[in-house]
Image (cartoon, rainbow, N blue to C red; front, side, top):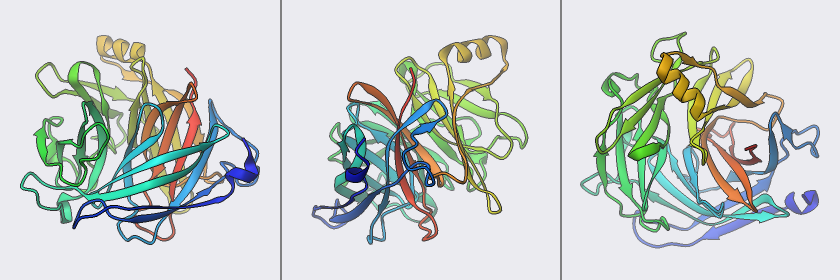
Amino acid sequence: MKRLALAALFVLTACGAGDGGPAEVTVTAEYVALHPEEAQRLDLGALDYRGGLVLSSDDDRFGGFSAIEVSADGTRLLAISDSGYWMTALLAYEAGGLSGVSDVRMADMLDAAGEVLEGDHEDAEGLADLGGGRYAVSFERDHRVLAYDIGADWSGIEGALPSPLPGPPGIERLRNNAGIEGMAPGPNGSIWMAVEDPIIDGRPHTVWQIHTGGGIDLSYNLAAERGFGLTGIAVEEDGSLIVVERYYAQAVGNRIRVVRVTPEALEAARAAGSVIQPDLLAEFTPDMTVDNIEGAALATVDGERRLFLISDDNYNAAQRTLLLSFAIPE
């Protein structure tokens, strides 16, 4: 990877039109080292760093990104924000590493009546590709799961109207700011769903497999490290789950765990009713480039499987929107 080239500053502008539709967004993307004190170091547990960016914009809508999808070839990014916005962008690479974004567009998310989501209704947290240009989006505060048809090229973000999808049992009883944060497509038309914190403090995480068109819903218990919340899920080609777990304490800072749950572990847990002990792939510590990571997606770039992570800056000037990429072992 050519460090000098990647360290350049990228300022890119996207143009759109229409009131409430995709609008012009100027985004600055600056390369960031994974280990600030060792800029050439690329290792993170079982993962290998393939470039990362700090994204920023003067547009008040930009930020708060809580979930992402990346096109299969790694060239396009789709994101949703806590304030009810869609965001799309093109991804650029140099020497195989993530180097910039371009053609950034943002649009309001709408309700079934075509009205812009506001207040407690706008807090989008989870995103799952349902195929054919349809995406499931989960919301917290007003806890619900909706399906939006935005098209395979994502050009429909400005006018897509939602339809309801089933959520896990007891969704209406979830805590105000502890809704469904992790979502990913599951087998046979199902969706993986998980709330941020264990339903009962000190107990394992609950991960559901919810069927959208009939079928038996399943739930699994996933071992949770004390103080870590489950914020993102991505699914590998073999059906393994890549799960992002987040910890934050003011006196410590952010810690992030990336773990894997294999199909064999899921099947064994279902048969035995046991708690799944995931395989730890990597752990971010506060001395590294890290923030409030919530979104995860997988793609193939140059024949290599890549994991993409994005952080939610909470629209807080003291935080950053990080977009990081890693080679992930098979």
